[in-house]
Image (cartoon, rainbow, N blue to C red; front, side, top):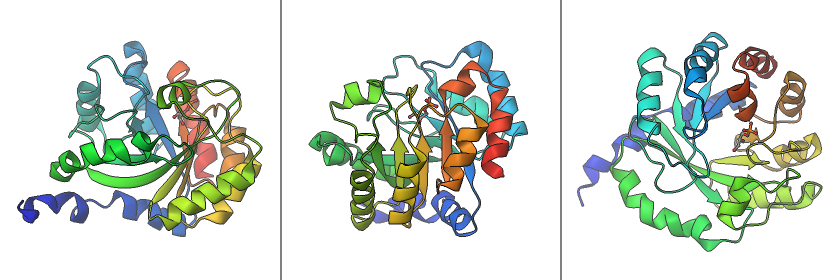
Amino acid sequence: MDNKQYTYSVIDKGLYKEIVHKKANGRKSIAVLIDPDKVKLSHVDQLIATAIDSKVDYFLFGGSLIVNDMLDPLLVKIKAICDIPLILFPGNSFQLSYRADALLFLSLISGRNADLLIGKHVITAPFLKLSPLEIISTGYMLIDGGVVTSVQYMSNTLPIPAMKVDIAMSTALAGEYLGLKMIYMDAGSGALNAISTDMIEGVSSAVSIPLIVGGGIRTPEQVSANISAGADIIVVGNAVEKDPYLIKELAEAAHG
Ligand code: 1GP
């Protein structure tokens, strides 16, 4: 294998560096999650316009199951009108597009499904190395959000119980010690209960890598509370898909 062609994604992209830099400077971010399968076409333009206007930091793209072919066209459309970084948050190995800027290389560390801890990664790693995407290894922790989410069902794993802060802290710390670059704590899309500020506080004090928090976040008050508890990036999906105008308040709460 010619190593030269593989160096591009590591050297030339600086998204992770920027995230770490922001964390070091206490700057918080908001990411809008777009599920290409669920997003209403009639809402997309408004969603993107409001996100640009609200200075949203990142777009994430993903879903537990994507059955349409909207991912590429969406990425192309958004890239043409703004420079907000486009990050893949794949629910499975098929959700790959070179049109994005980066990919969260997720290891489901809250679960004990070997395939999602390392198995799928072995299969996709050689493809990713050939891609122009910046690969950001991320420890993904599913937290019980009061309802069985798609991720829980599709991953065939148990989420960490919502009250077990010590388990969440130890899991995140193990992820950091294993060399993962970020932790993503997720109550799952459409969770009834978002992750508690107690748990966010515990995990953010346990690790030094950037902490992403999402799942069931619907109000600016929740965003502020999660930021104060130590989250670095807040992810919102469902709520802003239903009401794109909500992005402005949520972004203001994140940016402080
Ligand atoms: C799910 O964290 C994301 O993976 C966002 O969740 O759609 O509930 O905002 P919501």
